[in-house]
Image 1 (cartoon, helix red, strand yellow):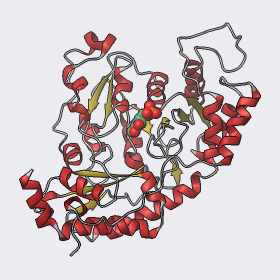
Image 2 (tube, helix red, strand yellow):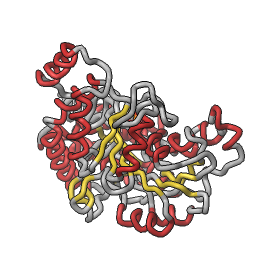
Image 3 (cartoon, protein in one colour):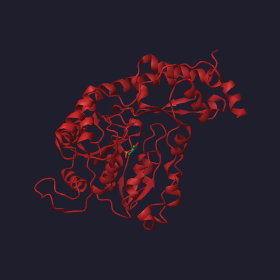
Image 4 (tube, rainbow, N blue to C red):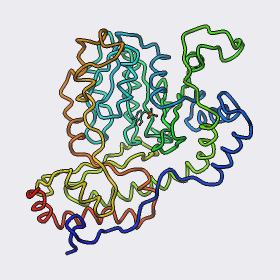
Length: 411
Ligand SMILES: Cc1ncc(COP(=O)(O)O)c(C=O)c1O
């Protein structure tokens, strides 16, 4: 039996997985074109073309390009009418921006639990937390897996809440044949460096609602009207949230390979699901049967330590890393971050003081925070043999679990 690399043996893999971002001549040409155009700011031809193409990509009528995904969530709530003191229901297993977008408007983020199988916001937990103050809900399409958008449409109908999809992980995912970003009232996307479509930093909001679009457009454009207004005419409160021509230029060139990469990740992830499901104690994130296409920003599985002689997730991850498989523990529980425990909300601290952000146990989110292992999206861009290496490394750890247990107990 081959010795574990962590204990001095040879690793399963000696070569690296594909690096991210992947770029080519078309990206350089696009950026050079922007440099030469002398139009480096915003609202130029690249930004406008990107907004048109991205709206179409997301089955949406409208898109506003922005500086980041955080800005997209913030603007979505702002344009959706969220006011100080309102409540916004969010999952606790997500990046901090999902909850902070509410707090940045003086609204109260309220944490609901997630579904243990998919990792996405649980509509039943959300419904139990709805109060007369609830203004919006933000389902996150975790790792690319769409949340149950049928259930959120029903909650919208029943309670009149605004549904903002956090699509930061899910460019191109489909729920019953329709792309995310077009399923709720507003979609919020990130193009931060690690994302499946990236411009280093960047974001976008999508919607099918014309009124919401015009409002969001004005807010992101320092309160100017989209059509008919003058340069020095600011009819409402707004800020500069605009994407530059450079960002739009690189997004347009990167979009050229988005579909091909999407397909490769999805194919590899489904293959990895079959390989890992055979290993007792490894539970891959579940795909809902209504999901027709799935982006993979991450590949998430649960590591059940009881099936691995009680060896901790942290030691398992170290062993997997040593075998040449990059992976991490991912998110903790957002509701337990110092900001939410201590209420450090800057100018909104007084307003939000005394509010309860956690109103139920969040048992499933805690399990995922404690048991998840994440592989990164570029790991899924290799070939079939690369994927087999991942499963082989996990199997090797399982076969050598007694040695790893001894190593772990001596630390
Ligand atoms: C789930 C989720 N929401 C929102 C964001 C915020 O995006 P950005 O980093 O572009 O502000 C991220 C980004 O990391 C994210 O992962």
